Every structure is written in structure tokens, then in C-alpha cells.
Image 1 (cartoon, helix red, strand yellow):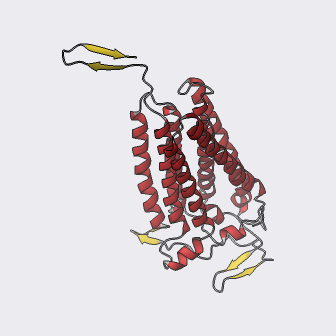
Image 2: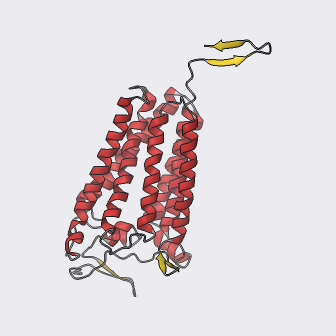
Image 3: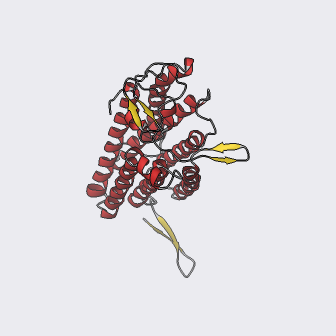
Length: 313
């Protein structure tokens, strides 16, 4: 794949941003022929995938990616349960920071439903902005994880104004960087829908390279915490599972989407399994935090049989 050409990626998987990007490499769906010197100047569509999940007409409304939609709706429930469980650990280290992270993921899933299911349909004036917001929220989640990954080293006090400013500030920077990289790439499409080719180098570097580096740093930080600070190998196993599910999700989306889609007769595509793997990854992120933190009470209170109160420091 060329850095400035998403044709090879978008021909394999139906990413929302592919509906807005254009390329000089064009796929003829009838016979799967690639034309490398195609001029899409007057073509009012993005890069088409070889295979994508079929849509459903329900009450005179077309819904795209129904299988993926069900997974994301279920993910909303899972994230809400995780947020509730985090709120119950009143004095655990990083409680406020991780609660904020999962609130961001809740927003990300909502906007994913909007762009994947056709609430804002491809080709509409609002679609590029919703896609840019979705990409921006994904970046915000990655950048907030960077700060959360450093909490285990006790570099600053968690839950304080300083800590929350750090995590909110970095997530805001991540959102702005990813949103601007996307919307500036889409601006030619927004302006007149006719552009010979779109340079996606900046978006690729910000959305894929920088975010991947940040996730790698977070993973290394969690491994260091699990091996040398809490010394809990169950946490190391949870980190390994999180990495496994994340990598498998990326493989399903970017490498196997066409094979999956054709194998099940267009009922689902790689985005379905990508969403499943992503929610398992988020569950492992929560479990990593849950196993490395306890309620940090300075003392406990118990009552003896005779009714006297005992304070244990």
C-alpha cells in the first residue's frame, strides 16, 4: 500500500472513510479488474470495496451493516456496565481517568453506529464531518490511554485536578490532531465532490502511525507495571489477550474482510469481526486496570460481636 493511496486498503474493506477518498486506481466490480490510470475526476463516489455486507430495507429506511450494528449496540451495553463497575471502586487508583476513557469509547461507538449504519449516508453533506469526528474520537481514546498507562508508575497523584487535566488535555489534542488530519484530507470532497486524486499521507501518518506508536507505548507501560510493580502474571496474561484481540481485529478488517464477506454471501464482512475483537480488547483493558488496582482505603472499620468498633490501620 502506498502511503498516499488508500486504494489497496479500501478495495479490501468497506471503511467509512473510503466513501470520501478517491484514487487513480479504480476497481471494476463486475470483473474485479483494477485500472491503475483511472481518472475519477467526474466520479461522485469514493473507492469501492470488492465485497461488503448487504444492506437491509426496514420501514422504507436503508440500514447498512446490520450485523456490525448489532455488535456495536451490544458494545454500548458492555461499556455502560464497565463504567458502572469502575464507579463502584470508589478509591481505586486511576478510577476517574479510566472512567473518562470509557466514556470516550461510548461516544466513539455511537458515532461508529452513525457512519456505519447510514444514519448519515455516504454522499451526504454531513457524512465527511461524522467520519472525521469518529476518527477524532478514536484518536482521543488512544491519546488518553497514553496518560492512563503512566498512572501505575505514580509519577503524579491520580484523580487530582492535575491528573484529569493531563488526560483530558491529551485526549483533546488527540481529537484535534486526528479530526484536522481527516477533515483537511476530505476538504476537496466537501468543496465540490470532484477531485482527481486525494493526498492521504498526512492522515495516514496521524491516524495510523502515531496512534499505533501510542498504543505500543501503553502496552509496554502495562507490561512493566504487571511484571515489576504489581508482579501479577494474570495481568500479563490479560495484556497478552488484549494485544491478541486487537491484532486479530485489525487482520479481520484489513486483510480478511473480502474472504469473510464472500464466504458468508455478503451477510457480514470484516468490520463485524473487527468490532467483536475491539469490544473484547476494551474488556481486557478494563480487566487489566481492575486486577492492578484495589480500593485504596487508609484503614478499615469492623464491628465485634460485643458491638465495639475496631479500626485497622
